Length: 193
Ligand code: ADP
Image: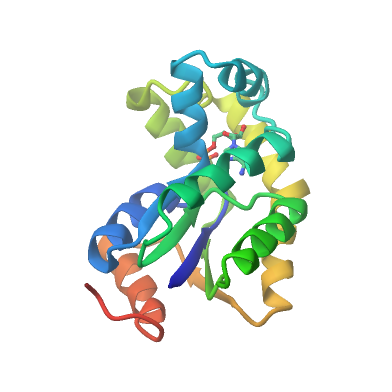
């Protein structure tokens, strides 16, 4: 198994690049943002609870997200590997993920961190808001999401850097150019499928 975390602030291109990586390397894509939006649209108890946080640009509580991810990993026990997108977002989530994977006799092999200047993030997210229909892609909520990222999520990079697993990738430029930088790192572990 090969397990990858695609890491970076909101708007850094994790979703776009995850789709590219998933098809090139045949990994299973797990996006907690997508999973949460699915719960919200089905109005499940979890979704109703999560929406309160998401609409304010705040992180959903760790125990909610960790419970959700554990089930997803179990559903695809024979996967070639996973790409985690938007997860882990706190140090507690990172520790929980490490434990979950250890329990399955595997681990995170690589963390690719997309780096994009803050003013470009805001520009991209405001642009996406015009077409995405996402209620959290408006300027006020975007500012809060970026603030949450620096307050709680950035520490996840330090957690994996201490394990020697972090690679920083320049996240501005063309989509293809960024994909090729990401692929180069992944190919040190896994050949395209
Ligand atoms: P983005 O990376 O563009 O902010 P996501 O789709 O990853 O968007 O997440 C949207 C929202 O869903 C977040 O602002 C947060 O409220 C919630 N969320 C997603 N993943 C997590 C997570 N791992 N932990 C807590 N909250 C999360």
